[in-house]
Image 1 (spheres, rainbow, N blue to C red):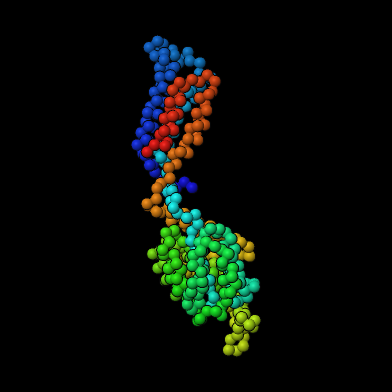
Image 2 (image 1 turned 60 degrees about the vertical axis):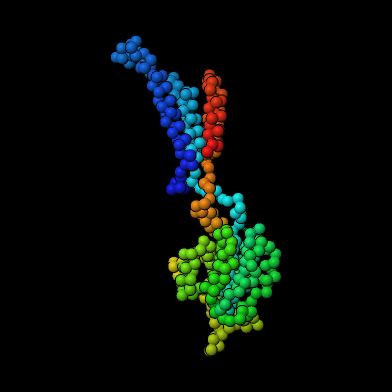
Length: 346
């Protein structure tokens, strides 16, 4: 996509070639006018009545073609550019750390079969869209723990995901800030901008500051995939019973929409909700890749991509007009070679 703000030329001195191109067109057109040719032979006031009009006039001549080719060649040789090249040493896919919430509320069944099981399935679906990409898995509740470090082998995730349950965590809570810090440590030695993906039913508003601080100091983006509904649902315990309060009433766990909105507003975190299809997974995948491209474009050490080569296409199409019947451009071959060399120069 053309970014006009970033548009500039790698070899701007070649734009000086536009001046002779324009002068060539103007001079030849002036020299070829009827008034110029008959000046001094026929009085101007008589010439106006002797002219037969413009019918049959050829508006596009070989000299016009040469002017256009010279102008396009100058622009191409100047090296227009508006985006940076991706380093050949950079990886095709950005690394990702998946932070899975294992607090008791993830056992709510407002999303079938449960929030946790649906979140696990989304992780599996996401891995299928990232062949060859490195992904890590951490879990958290009151504390955060690494399950798998960054790996490009998705097959090892299945057995670990199947074993995850809310009752394996050593303490209760929903310490997303601790999970964020752990995810940062997994990505800090990586040279490629990564993504931290939270699958959770809520993040407390008082933890938004930790996410805002991360946004200010790190190139790694944070995405939250919200699991659950605002209407909420009962929490099924590992033994199959439902969690109840002191009065014996079922506890309804609701989606913490207010906390997620605070996170979006104060820390710029991208928040999406799970869907019944794979739209959410595809959306996350696009965000991951677009973030990587954005960071690479902002890298001031990266080279600018020379777009001057694309000017060869219109130059070639215009060059086909040299074969038009009745046209003779004797030095056209020399000009075409000059344009080819100019676009690759610098």
